[in-house]
Image (cartoon, rainbow, N blue to C red):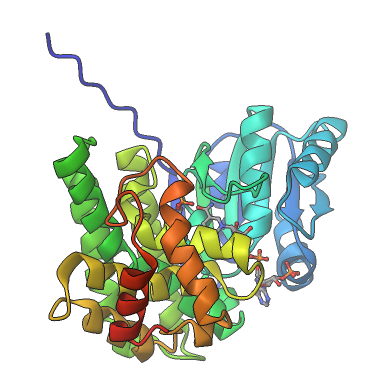
Length: 348
Ligand SMILES: NC(=O)C1=CN([C@@H]2O[C@H](COP(=O)(O)OP(=O)(O)OC[C@H]3O[C@@H](n4cnc5c(N)ncnc54)[C@H](OP(=O)(O)O)[C@@H]3O)[C@@H](O)[C@H]2O)C=CC1
Ligand SMILES: O=C(CO)COP(=O)(O)O
Ligand SMILES: [Zn+2]
């Protein structure tokens, strides 16, 4: 009997471009969401764009958060209940967006994403990442019903947030390699559509790397479009597999071993240089990944991530333990092999 089934959840309205923030009301109006919104934001995005967002709705309420934690989500859930919010708007970087996404899921209300920084693909995806205990990786959550990404606003965010978003996309190359490997070795379900879309997204970003420059709004445009595409690939797959392989495992370990030193995208970028080397050896594509990262000003070494070589090696040799996701790291690589991979690639 044929018993396959798929349920793909995608955003309905995705609006990207110069000055589109003022089209948020229209993009949300089309969705016929009930009631007024609760705007979940953080201090800087609130200062930069809060008023413009609130001006487009009747009786909006706001809650400003500083951290993405479960108690913050609780606060947002309570605020949403107290104000009888019909839907939540996440305004800001990854933190307020993940908090709003998770709180919406909990409340069973719609979620709208208004990123002010293009720092990783969580700003558009159906994945939410809230640190809990030793867990750092994302879990499933309903994706935003609408995404409104104003490239003028995003272009004014600190440049390193944009280069982190680029590096998160470049890491899709190794994520897809890991996924295919897991299909071959562990019979993990693989989606050709999601894998191809994810690889093509990385390819297009690298092809356009020459236009990714500080103070150039087109950079924000290129990156946001890639992040949307990567988010769609994850929605098709029903998991973060198309955009998260061994390089993400290493990054999640770094978040535990050396918290707050470097941005998510920068960590996965550096780790993907090494995991590409592990996949394809000295003559493989790791130099292409390193050069692509360098060309957009993203870090290419442990040093540039502000972690020590020993911290990076600890993350690399323990990354396989943190999640049930088969990758090139298999059941763990030895310290000697990790050191050699780091040395050959210039990461340590
Ligand atoms: N869902 C997913 O799949 C993923 C989620 N994550 C999660 O995302 C979070 C990290 O994302 P990130 O975006 O770096 O985090 P933040 O939301 O903390 O944003 C980073 C910094 O940029 C500031 N900022 C945001 N927009 C602007 C702007 N336009 N101009 C100036 N400053 C701005 C913020 O200000 P302020 O301090 O005022 O907030 C903050 O200081 C983590 O919680 C991580 O776990 C990471 C990867 C994937
Ligand atoms: O960051 C992500 C994809 O780019 C999400 O991946 P994780 O599921 O590993 O957190
Ligand atoms: Zn990522």
